[in-house]
Figure 1 (cartoon, rainbow, N blue to C red):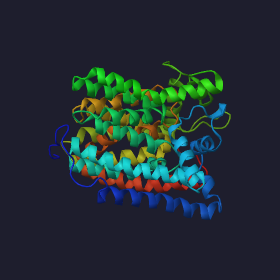
Figure 2: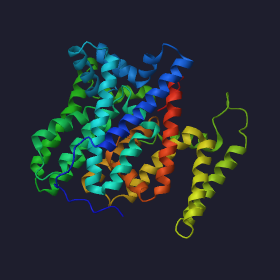
Figure 3: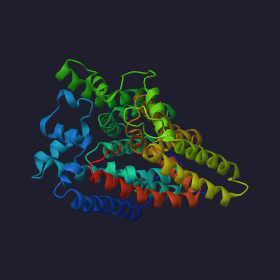
Figure 4: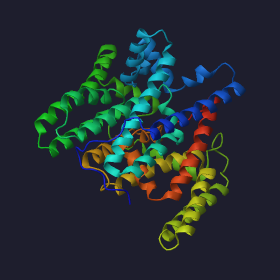
Length: 417
């Protein structure tokens, strides 16, 4: 069992940038950028900058250089505005500035995450959280011109201050507003604000800070109002990706497609040819093995672990990235349900609000990388695996392998998440 964490408001000892944080951050970033650079040099010489600014990164860089247009109103302004500001101050290309900001923000966010985890979960769980955050394939988005690093930084800093007594409202309000201006689910920071101030019986002050934090969302609405005369343009712009604003059941078809792909494989061109039976048979076997492993986890732990390992690797080999992505999302839901007693209510409430917003986005695109940018879910991930050291070692090795494979996919211009 991990040592009992100190209570709320207890001071943290040691430097913010501990050796564990720096080595984990630096080693994982060198692994990703080194693999990417070598692969690009072999497969697409001279296209490293293009690969580093792929997908959403291209939209953020375009906003930083040219401002908003109708096609990119779905992207929130905190990150591209900071890139523009720093680019105006330093004689550096926007891509270089964006990479510096993403990686620098990730380093500070990782240090804060380590301290927050150590406070509430103990030193061993904090160590596992840092390692798992760095050595997983989705951590590459903390190094690209994406908003993940900013969201993790501002949300983790806000949650850290919400654990103090009294809460530093004047510092918290602008950071929470930046969290809400980083990405759509950043508005979920309102939930822990109200819970934390309610715990201290300062709900009036909490309401003021919550309203101030919504200033980040108000900035997004003003951009849409200016360009389209539509304060909800950031929601309506997402229809281009198949999202329908509001709570509805349109996302069920996407979940159906993902499950079909995992169990039956991707549909053939034209959809007329029957799907082979091998994949559903193999996936059924992996599910059965996983169920047997779960039953044996206490009576015969070594056998249970071996079977669960076979089931996990089998699901990955048979179902591919779609199976891994579904496991990440389902795993996040289970972590949230199992981890209620591990975290204070404000941290758990933030994770629950974020997860609900993720699941309301209708299509399943990028769900897995959104989950891995949510501090309390990362903390629960570390806490659970710290109790199962064999799984921790395996997933760190598997995550390292997948980080290299994702770098190779990016080098070939393939979609990742």
